[in-house]
Length: 126
Image (cartoon, rainbow, N blue to C red; front, side, top):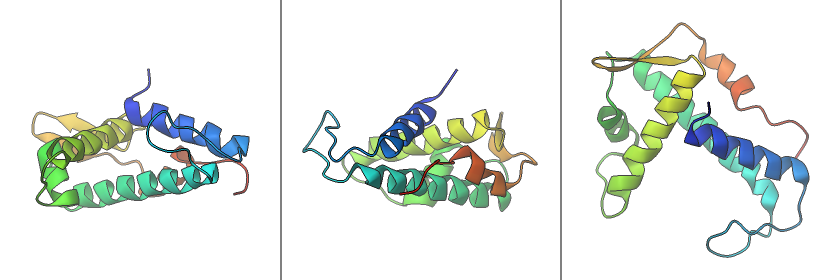
């Protein structure tokens, strides 16, 4: 079973590896440089690394506490988007063995953060 961030990263990987000259994401304007999907994956890798750093220096954290630590005060639609993104990353990290959910929130496992590189691996050159 895959989670939403896993599916998103898989889709971005396929786009990056296909070397398209243009892509149509299904919303907004076309993307003139689909190789930027590599940058989006890198942003998700950095966000996941930041969450692991938060959990390394804290007792278990709920999705809400992680959201607050990542984004601070949110307004408008970001009130919904921020917690959704934090939760998607926590699910992803749990699925890949970096965190586990407890009754108090999420906590780090012993899997080293360096293993994030292989989890977010993109084959091929930009």
